[in-house]
Image (cartoon, rainbow, N blue to C red):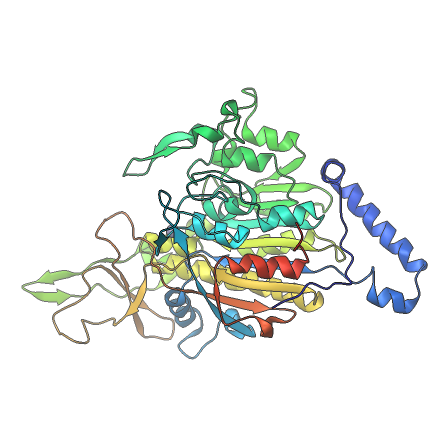
Length: 481
Ligand SMILES: [Zn+2]
């Protein structure tokens, strides 16, 4: 397993001091290290304080299972091609685990991003919809991001979802239900099914920490980039004269809303970047908005839908790419101090729910490009570990693009797309987890883990999802919290 460098002197910080004058504190740390340079021999320098601290970049492809990777690889690079992912030196598999809320001893085999991100972020298995809290008992589970921050490391969260969505939320906040994203959402119903949501014990008047956006506004994470203005524009429960956004500004966050502003951020300022009302628009769509559809039969004969290709999604114009956001986040961290950065490509999953293969492909391309940025950084900072994984599997399957291979005149009973690839063949992509017209569900297959960095050849080829936490914790040298 990966071991933290025992000689490395991590810089412990007293949080209240750093949180108020984070930039000055970083400067002082850099200065003190520079001063120590002058008082050390060259040999000491090589082995002690100037050795850069371990750095961790975790990249999560939401719903990025082997089906999604294969479909994206074929579309983006051809059947003989490779993704950047495929060049990483370690490739293992991860068993996804969750438990039942009412009976936490009972295994659940298909779960959601809230419980899976909680497993990755905290090392603890929980139930669906829970954000860094325990199944049944609602215990607060400390995340790797919080532990890193307490140890004085840099911290960052980048996502193409709302920052309040399940995956980013599990790294920084704690609540019993992922849908309590803003103060107005604490007791509500969600979606077409009117499923009840109740986070009343987290309402501040009841002694709780507030909604996810309110908890984010109170954070000391160095950089937060994603979507979700609608949850920050709500009135703060603590002060009815303020929005949650105002509370974030009062807490020292510089709020940015435009792609161009990413280039202007300053390393000594906490940044909250919000680029869309909710999930950020995706890069690709089917030509004219085409997506998977139910197969028609005419006089008992299967009538296959027309093949289509992908095109740029006009709504994506002006959005920062995931790679640009990743680069901006990395620019916030100095070379000496360690950091924990989580980068999520969220809509591989969300587009698969909507049966839009082009959408998922474009977001997997975004992940691939963000990985390129991370790899560039890791090559010049060899103390960096990059892990790439998925939280859970999704619905899409790569199937025959014609009728059933076994029985002519039979075809998918689900929703089916025929995707014309740039190399001129056709992929059949099937979605059949449910007959609900609105969206597909997740599936329960194992997910991939890729790694690049120190000692990755010592990682086991099979792990359970919660063990990813331990890999990150050991790499960062944070084992004694
Ligand atoms: Zn999902």
